Image (cartoon, rainbow, N blue to C red; front, side, top):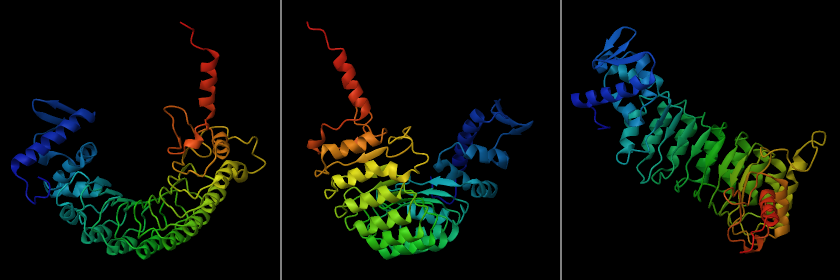
Length: 379
C-alpha cells in the first residue's frame, strides 16, 4: 500500500478507522458513541473531519507506515504530517526503500531522526542526497548496511546536515577515509559515531580528523577496523576528552599506548571493548586501574575506590587478550565496583582467557564466602 500515489477509498477508510482506534483510546477529549467520535461537541464521522491538532496527537501513537499512509490522504493531512513529524523509521520497508525516501524527503523537512537500517542493501546515493537537500534539521541518521552508498553520500551529508549528532554507517564498506574526514570537518556536533566494519573508512587519517573537529564525541565504535593503530586512537583520546564508550574490538594493531591514552585523557570513559586486541598487556590494565586517582583532583578524592557505580568503567571486554595476567586484571576489577564477574551481571568479559579464572569481583567473592560459611549438611 505504501508507495502508491493514489489511495483507494477503502484504504482511506481503513486508515481512518485505525487512527480513530488509537485516538479514542488515548485522548481524554475523545469519546466514542454510535460509530462517531466526538470532540468538544463536534462529531467526526469521516477522515476529512479530523482537526489538525487531534491528527498530530493520533499520529504520534501509530506506527510509521500508518503515518506515511496518512500523509497521502489529502493536502491537509500531508501538511499536518510534514509540519509535525520529527522522527521516522523506514526499516520495515523491505522493497523500494530508495524510491520511498526520494518521495518522502521533500515533504518531511522537519525530520530530526531518520532510521534507514536495512537487511538487504536498497539505498543509493541519490536518496541520501535528497535527504541532505531537504532535511537540514537532521540530527540522528542510521544508514547501517547500506553497501551501495559511495562517498557522494558523505559529501552530501556534510553540506546538508551539519547538525548531525549521531551517525551509524556500520557495514558501509565503500566509504573512503577522505570522505569521512570531510564529513567530520562539517559535522562538528557529532556525539555518537558507529564505524563498525568500515575498514576503508576508519583509518588513522580519518580518526585524526575526528579528533581535530569532533571534540564533543562521546561514543565511537571501531569494531573490526583493522587499519586503526595507536596513532588514530591517541588522536581521538587527546581530541575527544568526553569519550564514554569506545569499541576497539578486532583492532589488531593497537597496543597499550592506545589504552593508556584513553585512561589518561578520557575521565568519563565507561565502556571499553578490547576483544581480540592481543597486543594489550598488563601495562594497559594498571593504567586503567590508576585512572580514577589520576583524573580526580586531590582535594575531592577521599579514597581510591569510587563511591558508587556511576563513576569509572562499567563494561570492559578483554576476551582473547591472552597476554594479560590475573593480578593486573584484578587491579582493574578492584578499582571499579561496577565491573562484575558474578553470574547474571557479567560486565568484565574475559572469554578465552583461561589464565584469568581467578579474577573475581567483590560481590562474587562475598557470595563465595557466604556459601562457605553455611556448608550443606552431610547426608
